[in-house]
Length: 174
Image 1 (cartoon, rainbow, N blue to C red):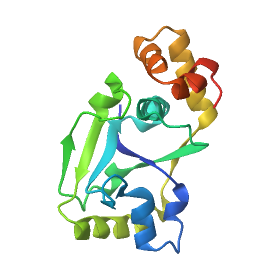
Image 2 (tube, rainbow, N blue to C red):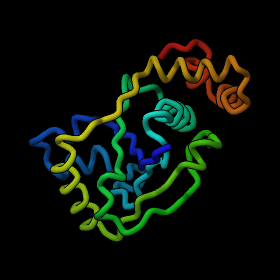
Image 3 (spheres, helix red, strand yellow):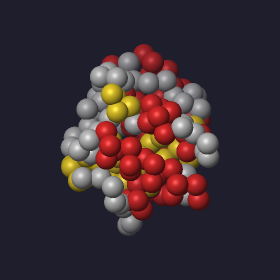
């Protein structure tokens, strides 16, 4: 099983040609709570072709967010230079941490804004020909619903914690 460092992107269009570096940083690599560039980028060390859907569903549910129409993931392991280190860290979702995604969570550590900017500038050039891994909201909702119907304790718990998550998990509809 081949693992990669999956980064769930907010918006695939961030990497379209012509985007200003500052805009890419604000859209994809920003710590909104502190209003600064995020120097610890969350990635998931998983087999992307087999575990993208589970990862996306658990991150969405654990973060208590509404489902985006589709999420795109990028395998950062192919661009393995430009960061200081990879640190294994448990997830810190606002609602709950699923065992699988918590165990797979890693952070790419950057020492400065300059190091992050250099990495993102290089990444923008490289990813123009990259494969983005896509998962749609319907697939994510159906995955959560299947786990809930199978009486998966983590999915039952997250539904008890959030009406917002329960709405798409219990119905299988985004």
